[in-house]
Length: 241
Image (cartoon, rainbow, N blue to C red; front, side, top):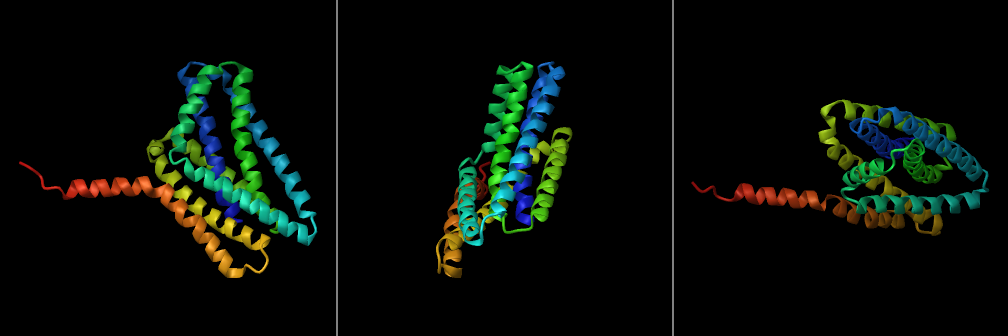
């Protein structure tokens, strides 16, 4: 349930922030009357994702044990690949923000904003469905509960972000979520290898986690380390009078 919660929270937060950015931009353009299209599009994207997730999860659970192991292993590797893709976009939240602002300015019609919000939520929903497919051996009720809790908390945090000064600390929030996501990705990658390669055991699982987590953390945190080093060098320089 915990991995489902964290993954849903991460994906839900990004989707909620995108919707928030759209609404804020509409307010700045004095077109708040079009906000209804954004809400309807977001709800439609959420509904399609939920229905697709339930159907896919239930169908996957009907697989026989041998097929279930192979399917779950493949889904784990696919999910780990998606997480690795996320890590390569070190400043994704800023890129998403600028991209969304540009699209809102271009799409000022009801249908255009509906499609924009629908696709924004659906994209995150599809990614989340893939993540949850890695847990077909788990109790479906617990997976669903973790997902609902993650979405609820993500929406709540997004509301707080846009109504308070917490937005200035958003980078820290995404950084912490990114580290958690890397750890989950390492576990998924390692377990996927073990399920697909017979006789791998704990050694293969350990190697898989190291291979995924170490380079991912380096890529994700290297800019922070550089800033820390540069700050340390500046502080160590003697001050001239």
